[in-house]
Amino acid sequence: MNHRTTLLAAGLFGFSGIAFGTFGAHALRDWLAERGMTVAWETAARYQLIHAVALFGAAIWSRQTQGAAQRRVSWAATCWSVGIVLFSGSLYALAAGGPHWLGPVTPLGGLAFMAGWICLCTAAYAKET
Image 1: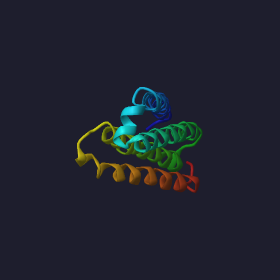
Image 2 (image 1 turned 90 degrees about the horizontal axis):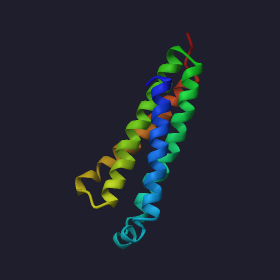
Image 3 (image 1 turned 60 degrees about the vertical axis):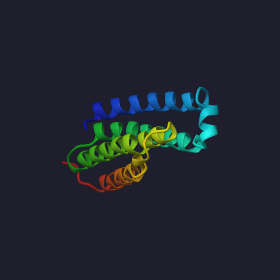
């Protein structure tokens, strides 16, 4: 992902994270509580928003670097975007009564988040060209 795509992803995921979090806290509050899914919804929104901010930082870093460091920051951004879709997306769906087969998707999103952070760590020591 280039810095503009990463910045766009940060904005879209940030906006939708606020929208989903607000929707869950207000419009779905009682329904989620009855189903015991309030924590799952809140976790989805929290992880989405944390990684939206991380994407924003990655966009800035990506614009200011080049070479291997830039590629690794790009991989971090890609992993975080995939993580948001898989982790947060599956939790939202499960909390909303989605199919149970989505349960195993959530940890895959968590692994994508972790892979992104590892990519970021390696970018710190990558040579710029």
